[in-house]
Structure formats: C-alpha cells, structure tokens
Length: 596
Image (cartoon, rainbow, N blue to C red; front, side, top):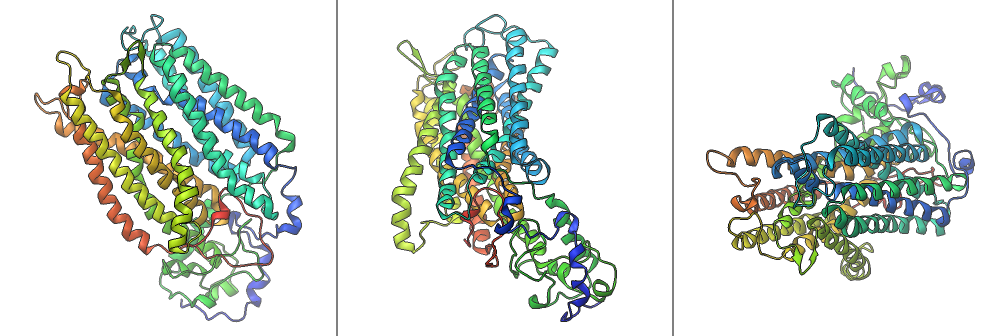
C-alpha cells in the first residue's frame, strides 16, 4: 500500500491521548510540573558526598584490579599469556556490566536505588575476596611476593576467588556510570548557575576517579606486591564500606529523578514498523507523523528534527490508510522523534566501533605493561618499586593534561577555529587515537631496549623500569582526548531518553577492547608458538618478542584511524527542536549536546 500525503490529522488526533508506544508514552512533564518528578535539594553540598563516594569506590576497585595480573601469576601460578587474558576478560566484564546498571537505572530502579544495590554487591564481592585470600590462597603467609611461592590452591578456593572478583566487577561496573548520572541530577538545569555547576561536575567526577586510583596504584599496590595481598583486599573492603555509608548519609537531601521507562521496545517498534511497510515509498519529511505541540511521544525527551540518513526508517513514520482507519498499532506507526532516536543509535554505532581498538591500547596498562615492568630493574637500593605502581604516571598524566587542555589548548585552538570548545569531540577522539598509537610504539621500543639488557640465566633485565614512563604518559594523554571526548560525544549525541545509554557506550568500548585484546593474545600465541618457538608472549618474556605484539597493535590503531576519519566526516549530529517549554532532561552530560 502506498503512503498518504497526510493532511487530515483528525483521525489520528483522537487516538493520541491513548498512544502508548510500548513505554514511549506521551508526557507533559515540563518545568511547570517538575516538582512532581524531582524532589529534595541536591546542589554541591550533597554532590561532594557523591564525589567522595566515587573516589572511595574507585580505590576499592583498583585495589583489586591494578595488581590482579601479578596475583594470578604469583599466587595462582598462571602463565603470563593466560593471566593477561584473564585480566582482559575480567576488566571487559566490569565495563560490560555498566550497560546493565544504566539500563536498570533508566528503566526501572532509578539512579539512587541502582547505586545503592550495586555498591552492596561490590562490598559482598570484596568480603568474599578477603576471606578467600586469607583462608585458601595465601599459603604460607607472605607468599606471592615474587620470591616465595604459594602452595597449590584447592578447586573450591579458586572457584570462590573467581566468584568474588566477578562480583566486584558487577558491583563497580553497574555503579560507576549510574553515579555519574545521579550526580548530574543534583543540579537543576532550569537554574543558569546550577547549569554551569553541572558542567563542572563532570570534571570533578573524573578528578575524583583519578585520585582514588592514584592511592591504589601507589600505596596499596606496594603492600600487595610485597605479599600482603589480604591486607590490600581488606583496605579495599574498608574503602567500599565507607563509600557506601557516606552515600546513604545523603539520602534525605538528594534530588531524585524517576526512571523514564524501557527504551528497547520503542527502538524495536521503529524497525518492526519499517519492515511492515517495506514496499511503500517514504513520505516527504513534512508529511511524516509527529505529535502536535512542543512535547514528544517519548517520556522526558524533546522532539528531534528529521534527518536524511537511513531514510528507509522513515517508513515507520509514514502514514498509510491502515494507520488512519485501522486500529492503533504502535508497532506499525511511529513518530518522527521515535524514528530519529533509532537513527541516532545507528549513526553513533560506527563511531563507537572505531573506539574499540583504542581500548585495546588502554587495556595493556593492566596486563602486559605490568608483566613487562615486573621483569625490569625495580629495586633501587633497599626500595622495591612495584611494577603496577607505574600506572601512577598514567594518572598524573591524565590530571596534568586535563589542566593543560582546558586552560591552554582550548583557548588557543578556540581563537584559531572560532569554536569556543577548541576541538570538537570527534577531533579530540581522533587525536586520542594518534597518541595511543604512539604509546604502543614507545612500549615496543622499550621492550627492544629491555631485551638488550637481559641478565643471563634469569627472567629479568637490568634495564630500569623508569623506561616505561613514556608509554604510561602517552596513554594518559590519549585518555584525555579519547575517553573524555567519548563521554562528551556519546552523551551529547544521544537523545534525551537514552542519555545513560550514551554514557554506557564509553564503558562498553573499554569492555570490548579487553575482549579483543584477549583474542589478539590468543591468536598471536597460536600462530607464533609452534615447534620450539616459544611465541611472542611466553612465560619467560626474555625468550619472546612482546615488542612485536605492541607494534601489531600500533598498526591496527593506524588502520582504525584511517577508517575513523571517513566515518567522522560522514557523521551528522543530532538536531533537536527548540521549544519554549523545555522538557526535563535525563542523564549526564546533556549540556554538552551540540552538533559536532
């Protein structure tokens, strides 16, 4: 059946009051009615509690994660490649769980309840980990320091260990993106002063995250590296408990935003409706179906103007005679805003896929960088520097480069380009890819140099571990451009109804990057470890060629950058309809919404 040039909307108008769209119901929750949706005070006073909570939770998480690869090799006696793969899988699972937390908070539980539940899961995981380490794994006491071997562990002990660390992954993964959104909820965007504070909140949130990880990567990792694993896990547990209690203290005075409903049905409706109308010709943009008035059919979302990409989806908003005279069916007729929401997801996904290779670069810090540093010169006089503590240079690089970018680069580039933000989010992500590639080249060069100073008969090298500083600093600098740019881009380009989904895309990129890294290690070892050849990443790194693996990642990053350039040029930003009645907006980072 062909489409209609729909000018008589009376037949549809009578049904709009009952239009449901499977969770995308028509709402009028504008600022005049905001008190029905948002309660309590919020503001900086209670946001500081959330920032402290983020720092404490990050300290607890990295107290486990930063040295996990050495725990697996020293305590559980796993080989280097196996341990690196297990850490990559675990880290990937952490960030994959962020999608679970974002979905539950937006759809059903709300931000506060989601944060509380996942923090409890984090505490339970750390309790199990501490008990397992004490009762089953660290036998004899003080083993796992690189000198004293631990006794073989029982299957029960290993099973409880893996259960505990994956509970930690679930707790932290579901908590972090939800807390960022909940912190943004504490500011009322209708107030110009609080709107500026909300923009500053994200910088403070990222700073709190790095402060927490800095403590774990320096002080905590030192005790763990010297065999005091249970003590390190107990400190992480204490930090998580204090963070949970501090979070609960602010309960009476937080500002709360109700969940907006499940976004999956309304996105699915667009594809189903387009498929049902596959043989019709999409109507002209002005004739596509949309609700009258300033408010959209999606709860808590502003209207989105029509875009020319993926025009086949416009069939879902093309009105036919069956839509006019037949029964109301949200799986057959969708609004323009609903169609554009689906288009936004499809346009963001190619950009997101290009960020996964960068996450492969990022994940090397928690695996191969640590294994590389562990076989370098780490003892200076009587002081032993843990290999995992070198990530402190990454954290310091992030903090320094963040200040340099905002205070120097943005004003300078802004004057040249006329863009007050300096570089667009897409440009920043491209710069991050280039710096990440340079980090892999630096890591490969360090490994080549390390192999020149191998001590005969030993697994270590006399080359100082401080040769790793450039690769850590470069990764930190690339984070400022890539991950901060990613967070702003996906939050800015995601429609109002799926802002938390935008936040989760950044963490999901890290997740898949870890899985891809694990896959690459397996492929490389299967190809290179044949016959008497130990492969690129053997148990004894002095007999391998880990430098070639770093260079392989650098080549993949360069290829990814070329593809990214074409996709970034193709991308067209979201276009929201201006309205005098601004709909209450959901999710972190929405003040950054603009066309790239």
